Length: 83
Image 1 (tube, helix red, strand yellow):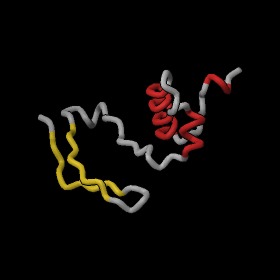
Image 2 (cartoon, helix red, strand yellow):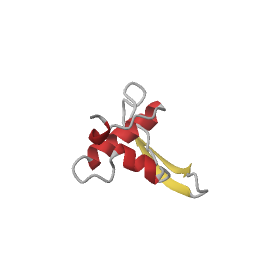
Image 3 (cartoon, rainbow, N blue to C red):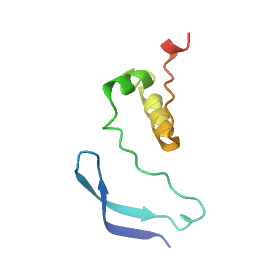
Image 4 (cartoon, rainbow, N blue to C red):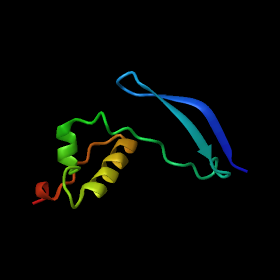
């Protein structure tokens, strides 16, 4: 059986509190779900370095940036920097 937790608040960097309802699958203890990541506080330079503004690689770049943040590293990967 799954569990729903209500009344959870996530504090954002600007002081705003985001109200959340969290659904936990049955096997959450064994196979945890990924965390919610807030990319709105990233600098424009970081977004540019990762390629979020690129119409072709933008969606993949966003995923890569989220993975980098989960692991606590900075790994810009734009193809223009790999020449």
